Image 1 (cartoon, rainbow, N blue to C red):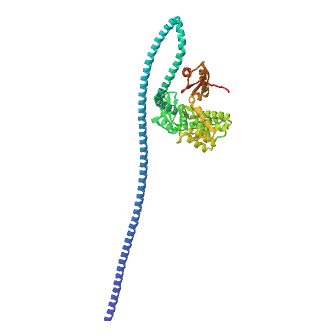
Image 2: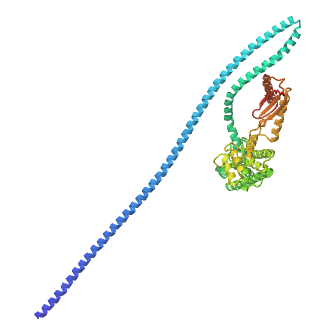
Length: 520
């Protein structure tokens, strides 16, 4: 009994021991797992923090780079703006200096003119005094002659006047020459002031003439239709054409303002279509503008083809024909540029024919010498530079390119045709009336100029030269002295001024030439 109880107790102790050990192991295992999980969690948190720090540093670096880049761009813009402002300040300062200098020059000129006016008044008074003394002296001489020669007073007067006429004419010619020289000195100074004033007064008129088109209206009621509700029609029209529409108090007219003559012509045609249309809205305006653009393109193409056919310059690239046709709507100093180019081509061809040169090439060079003016309002640079680029683009020959580049002395001339083009350009552009008149009118004016000079008895022959800007008059040297030649030039100039109408100024040159020839 005691042995069985001991075994049972032993077994129970063993079981309890195993249970205790198991529970202890479980506790230890749980504790270890907890520590492991905590360690892993700490490691994950540490790695997350490190990764977050790296991302943070990366974002900060990117933000700094972007900030430096933006700051650099803004600094460059500010520097460029500052340079532009400095340049404008210099230009304004130079303009102010120029204006001050001009004001000083004008003040000096005014003082000089007033001084010369005083001198002329004094000379005038002295001349009157001399005239009274001469009249008194003539009376005394007439009485003396009548007494000494036993002539009547009428006979003495005729003889005296006949003797004095020759001497007085020579003296008058000398006085006239002296007065002309003084007048030229005064006129040179006064002309600068007059030209400056003329430029100031006429610059605005010329600008208006070349940048404005006036479209007549059947009635003023159409102005409201052109403007539209809240101005939507006129805004759509200006946006579609690029031309400013001026609707003011001018009766039955609307003004189109723009520097591009082709756009202005498109706007004029489109506005005429709008006037003839009963209902107008922005979509309809765009349609009419597109229709007008097609019409102007046809006009440009037709103008280019017609001038090429008339001159016979050979094959021309279609795009170059269009550029040439644009010159129909371009004017320079009031002269149509396409007409000017045709005239230069004709003159160049005529001179080339006389010199046995290539007439077709000469005409082509003359026709294209101002081609750059067709695009000078759309591109930067002079019309010579733009024309040279156009010629190279369409593979024109070296003679044509040199004629374009050298007709204003920008580059040296390398061929005779370039010389002829420059000469023809001067004739067409500089002759009186070239900018406002036709060739037939110019020829008639030259003929009338020579007829006026030939009408004087002492003139052998007169020639109009320098495109009508000068008349060379050959006189009989044995009948005209040097002083009388000056007087004759003044009389011819006065007759030209009273009988003819001409632009600009005409120079009259009287030539008195004596040739002595002997043989041994």
